[in-house]
Image (cartoon, rainbow, N blue to C red; front, side):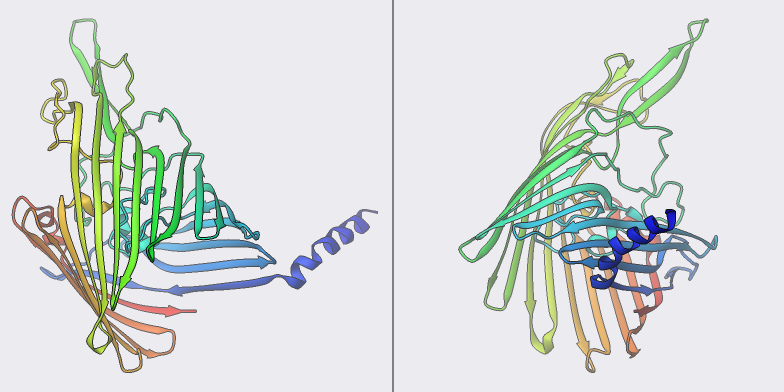
Length: 426
């Protein structure tokens, strides 16, 4: 009797096996980084291998994206299941449920309107979704004529992954908080509406969530029996932030233009029992304008202008030299907790890139730069990718940072490096 139940169960799932389609792809990508100053190795984790696997049955997909994160200096590897979700594609749209990476906005990579996923700062200089962390979430997208509406629900807050205690990381973080205060509302949600206006694709969006980067919310002190002070005990947490965004993409002759504008309104939730409380409210905006052009010899040109501006602030900010004496919150000492990571470098910057392929796409040459237009600083990079045989690339890249004392890029001068790698795709 027991065996007959097993056989009936197997027969029930047999159509799924017969008519389903399994697909997979990925790459093995060992690489190393060496400082240009003294040729010493930069020891940071990197993705040694990636595997994208899917299972399709009718209008149902099971999609996974897995990476092997490895560090040469320790020889330790860690498997990271970056995405694993179920996708259903009915006639009216699509439904996705599971751990996934969302993509909002119109510009390439530096999207101030896209705050659904936190960032992994170890991979901050990688493009697009490669720098994001997948979160458990649900999304529904529906289509009607030229309209497209998407709703996203995230049941739990997920912060940025920050590289604490990493001597080789270009920007040092002073300390790692031992704990974080629970957010007032764990769940997050957003909506995005897209349509066509005068041959332009235009979207408006709204997202309510919790900051991806932490803030100091308050300080507690305790008194011993002799009247002395024990502490301070610092309370770190995440502000609640609303993001209103608009983006557009269109074409003029050989040019493609893209743009995004995001308005942020944020508020700190504090505990009235803390000895020192740091309430704050703020409004700020970030924008990116991008132009693409395919020119002579099929060279692909891309330029972005990235800006950030604090509109208004109110409240108190920590005094890092004396936590017991907070200072007034100003536009200069306010630190945003959401938005594009490149806004942390400067309030106004330009990113330029160009790429070309030669010899029947066997050789690819890339060049890129980031310029701090407010505090003088420049990042310049270049890469040569050669494919001796199909599916195999040999890579050589260089990144150089320089800047004046006031520029964040000055802190990254010692991170100037050469990158060597081999990539096999399957």
